[in-house]
Image 1 (cartoon, rainbow, N blue to C red):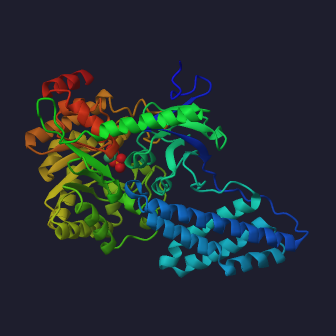
Image 2 (cartoon, helix red, strand yellow):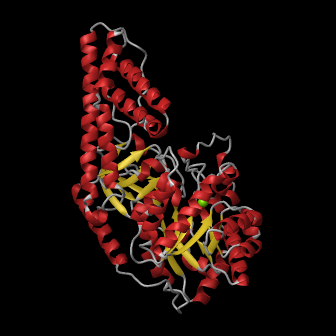
Image 3 (cartoon, rainbow, N blue to C red):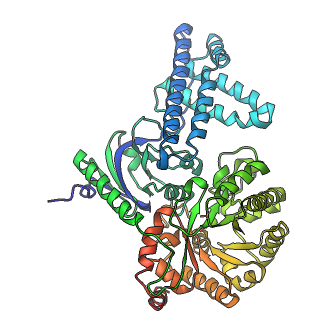
Length: 548
Ligand code: PEP
Ligand code: MG
């Protein structure tokens, strides 16, 4: 008998790139794009048009209130609570209040009586309020983008189109979208059981955030947005297979199997070791304290920019201290990566101008060339949080390219009392001078996502270049070996913190190349630990030689 949990037969299934392991099933809910304003209409009945305006605003308000209630419920949901669920509920409530603002409604009604049809009246009223807020500056200006979001929602409601933004259908669902921004992904509620996108690459930040949440995810899945809302699909975040049109029985069995597999892996514990006891630290990649889980030996990559993805104003020193201290207080050792802004992770508060080639421009540590205060404040905050918590705090910079950059960063970090200072190796130039970098810093952490991107000249978000971004590529392994050799010679740790570190089959190879720690999403730790424990160090070295 056919296994009902397997993807539907060819023709009924779809396939993409599995980027976050785990299997889930549920009805599709598609994320709608912002509505396009139609051409203006002649208004025959202003009363009826004004009623449409009011109805649209009421429907947006009701939708936001319902989402706020769901977020508040998620926040109380114990271990699986959505990160920042309480914050999300507050934000959604605040948005509902704006949509319900009588002044806004009166402005839109006045625009109708001035001759505009309902969608254009809403557009005019929201744009007017938005511009007023933007002109006030400060915190209020920051809320201006919220009015754009509300405008899109109100116009969609008025035109009878699906609500743009993350849907809130009120039941568990598979979120399907053409693409998601890291900010969208960061704001997902616990009712999302899996993500599938038409675009996106294996190491895009959306994939990374999904992995951090333990959410099965498939990217680069052609045809997925053509499925109707409500179609029940299965998602295999490892193989990338999508099963379409499953029976209830199949869905139940798939969920049972996934739970059993997660339970089995959750029982694995203890430090990372090869079969003959060679220690390899297994560390976590996190974006905030919400991603911390027991079972690892510390945090190998704290992507601090994930804390501030939707911020239009710089986070204050105090706010940063609180965010870092929250993580320091809960983990044995923490490698904090200073803000890595730019390219697919824009940080609006930096106000950086658009660039023709952002992946090769001002990103990561290079932001310091134009905005040095940002790094100074962050290093001050990390040092203060470390003092407050007596944490084993390590700090490293992203996108270091030359030994001079590593030296300058190390000087500034050490001047603040931070004693474990490192550099990420994400640019081939840094890998090739790993020995020189290690004269300046105490450790290296290899970011294979960007190191692949820059070594193979292949956009990490490109759905068609996954073969070049494959971490088994010998040229990438050679660069990793180069860094590990430099670390051995200098007697300093060299870890991997890119997504490659969470691939259980690759883990023995990386250890065989001489890597001293592997840092990954919590969901990957048990299978990497299990695989490493099956190989003696000599075996790892042989596997590494073969792979190279
Ligand atoms: C990397 O590039 O491998 C890395 C760990 O950093 P990020 O994925 O955040 O760019
Ligand atoms: Mg990187």
